[in-house]
Length: 256
Image (cartoon, rainbow, N blue to C red; front, side, top):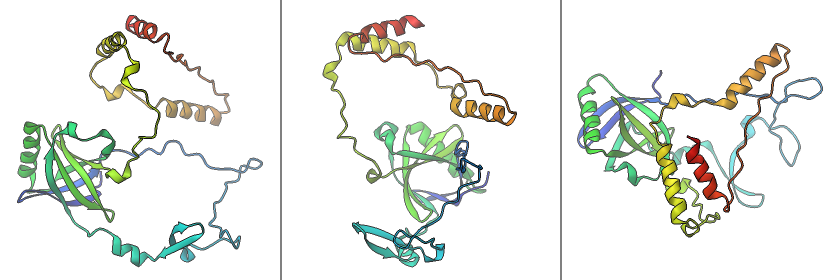
């Protein structure tokens, strides 16, 4: 793996030199190209001026913010650079927090942190201190000209930096129609808790796979060979209504 960032963790007056690596392998899925139906020629996308109906070169394109219908304020690349966060090569720990205090919606992207030669002992110290205290280190750092919020958490012998979203990035969801707890009876809740207990087991990531991608790959191979793909039938469980909810819960318990 190649590091995507080099710098250090600021832990009080201690600086821990580290390198950052992406902890995920981005899979865009199987890519389809847009083709002309008649001759299967690829479709080319162009930047067309809406008023003139002509294609515009990249050099003649600028960025603008629409503040009213068809009215824009334009920014040059130099003006946008002035707004960019000041570059820093430090992950500055701001405070320590309990993991349960952070809403799951704030977590975004995980990165691995590896100590650079000379920083191994301080790295291990921070890792073990976080383990013993059962705390997360809340930090700020700059990458791609933007200041990010993050938490650092020990995972095995690694320190993992989880990039976070800011509150302004989240939608509230307050306008969605959701039921109150008054619609649930004590007996229904009791049976639901039994089902949760029955279905509780350790998380084994290898038990899960992208079934859609696997089936799509099989169909692509079949089409290349000139074979007719066999469609697999998927079961669709009926949704339980309020009237038969208890029956569905009891049947779920008996299923095991």
